[in-house]
Length: 358
Image (cartoon, rainbow, N blue to C red; front, top):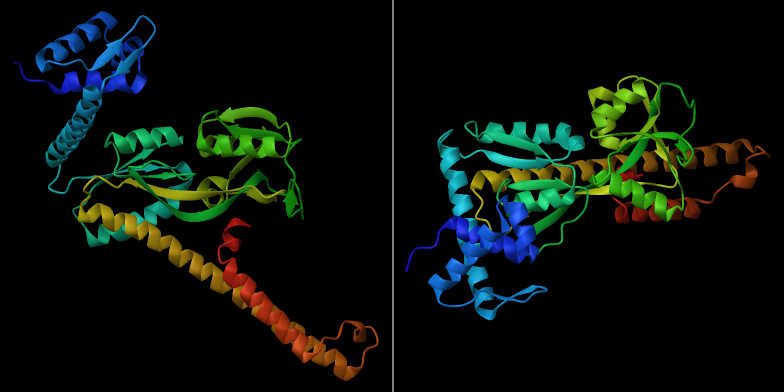
């Protein structure tokens, strides 16, 4: 009996994935007769059928299912080993590979800098990934150690951890809408992300829920391009709030969109992959960065509200003392002010990330 080769296992896995010899052959860039011949030879060497074939379709056999489990494990181990071998040729510390969103580069740079201080020999590689399915493929194929996405990944082999919420904002030329705090975007000339991107899916879903038909004048791959087009006066772009803080948005205004439009960012990694100490440390730093950010934001908001309540309390005493007939109607008793403060504090405790999304 001849030995099975990795490429034969990959052919078999492709057929299971697409449930079609023709589609698998197209994916593998080989002819369909050649693929069929390879599988028949495998079955002859193994001594049992992997598929039951009819003129209409194919079905995997019970032994084929068992073979699939082993083949999947072997191919994954092979890919992981090859990755490590190539990385070791470059550095004694295999580089950490990350699937990134364009809008996360600023804060992610700060986290990597902190991580590099702890691991000065560590190298990194970033891949910009625009859609969730590409992130899943890169994780499952060991192309990246972790990936950031606009939405949760629900897959039994992938851990998906929420990091933070943020709103989308409308960016406009300076003083285009002076003194306007919020804006509806249905009838505005919009610069939108291309179809099939995570952000575009969010925006399309938003307009569908609002039963609105956006006026799209231009589509672009990246926020950087969209921002440049706003500078040129071609329209207005919808971008994540944290991207607005980048250098590309100088001399532009941001306006809160009404009704609210936001997203949640997740960090995802393959939970059945044995990650190095360096990789897990970087993942934990990402989580800790946003836990700290949200906590600081929550404390800041509470301080502002407490200050406002204190001013209201002082004003109430002052106007009661001078006996102004105009303000007597809004005078609050001490117990009412205390209750207001307690209710506000309790509300903030239950909405600690509200300042991020709204």
